[in-house]
Figure 1 (cartoon, rainbow, N blue to C red):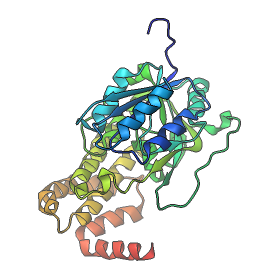
Figure 2 (figure 1 turned 45 degrees about the horizontal axis):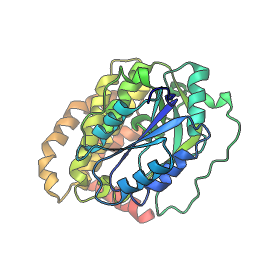
Figure 3 (figure 1 turned 60 degrees about the vertical axis):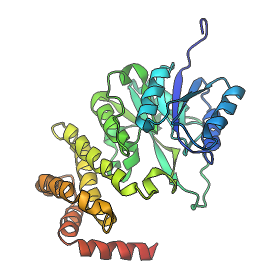
Length: 330
């Protein structure tokens, strides 16, 4: 509308059948201490009341924009959201997750004070079976909490920080020079983020867990078709490794390589006895053959982890024993 000021931040929320969680997600965004934002909700033709809930919220608060992008998946929903975004900065929040009140205040200040194109924060995981509160007390934002992303040796233990589109605030003009989300069933964030890391140069981490990643046991990752979809996760890890392998950041390239190799072992185990066992037997073998020598020679991967992948691939019955022992201790 003419004369209307554009928001500082556009927060894109893709959704599909999240009537149980969408209110919590939207409430957590509306509760931000930095309130100059719009929420661009893009629904993938939910069959429950998700979109109706979003519409009700949009009537009460005009910062919420409700769109439908039916039957095109989460990658298309995010790309559609970016095309509709009017803010100078872009953030992503998944509809089953929620965020802490100061998340975007902290991220925006990190970008402005450090002069970078994007900033990222830590996260915590939760689920309906984890009985713990995820409360963050509002306090002064301290500049010493803004640390160089690549100076922090936490990459291998914080996979989602590296591979998820969420937990980030990104300058929109910079984002226009990066790749769109590709059409993968799972792992679409990985390629997108790899491109961000390569092109951004300087990235800063807000060293606080401001994003809550909710493990939804009813999501596509846990349905009966989970196994086939999950192969995309393997492919996106190796594609990201290929992007990084000739660059100076060996820590990041080795992370993607190690993640891909471990997923090969896990995927083969989880597809045993399913229709996908035969379907993906050859692709798994080809990936292993292509990357095993590189993996074993990689200086940034521990001997223990090299041994883990090598032995469990050659002797899958040992991996079955390992998984059973692990499950028994839970």
